[in-house]
Picture 1 (cartoon, one colour):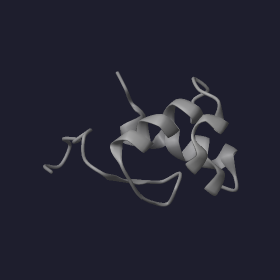
Picture 2 (cartoon, rainbow, N blue to C red):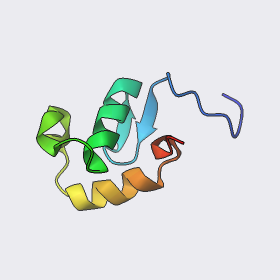
Picture 3 (tube, rainbow, N blue to C red):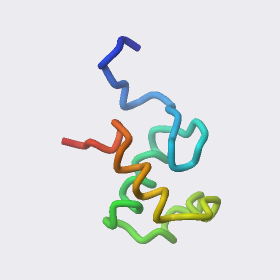
Length: 67
């Protein structure tokens, strides 16, 4: 991947989970962490102890910019 170009289909490192995750899990988690979906709708989020800190890390991630 070239610097500055984001491949939205590829697996990526997630600062909220602190590991590589799939693009689908990234999107689902983003929607939960930004308040669009319930946290409980993505079971993997139960692995995260501090959801508020995860929300902040997710918001700062370049993959969270959907515009």
